[in-house]
Length: 114
Length: 114
Image (cartoon, rainbow over all chains, first blue to last red; front, side):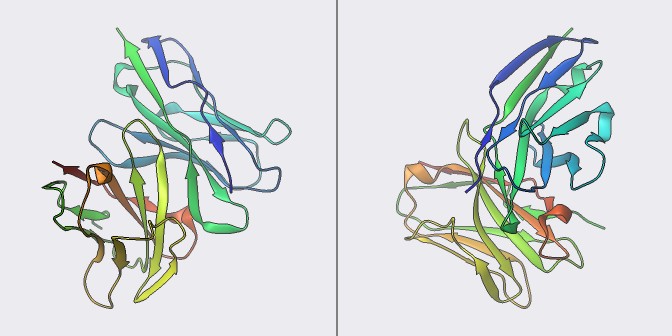
């Protein structure tokens, strides 16, 4: 089974500052990679996904992520955050032998301060 | 096109009662997935169903939990004789194919066992 590690449980950052949320996964074979955002008491909304092709993936709300196969990482970045980006962010990986399910990280709470 | 609809949004049950969680997939989606999010944790896969069939239930607890997705109507996740440890958010996702690359999540049902 896959394991997904999000090293930072909480990331405080000031508004308009850049941010990087880290994600590492365990598999060395081809996988699909995802970032989801969860606002308080809401469901998960897909930010972006990597299936193949360019290693730099652009998503909604100005977020982007870079797939690094050698480091098995898929870090999420935004050059300038807004108060409205305050939420919890989850990295997810597809099982390489079974694309029917996700393995999720434990989440990173992004707290954007004015 | 309405999104994935889950109800109820919040459910309170006393220990020993039954909990029934419903998930109506997006129109045209015949694949449903259930995930559980325990407090301060990421989502964990429970079960994957296609109309009238359970495809993968590797994440389901062996006892008290069951799921179905009948030909007509929503998918149901049923928890019998609930215990405090069942308190969690339960999320449903649906997909038009068996690939989670096209999955959309509902807003979840938050179950509290008192």
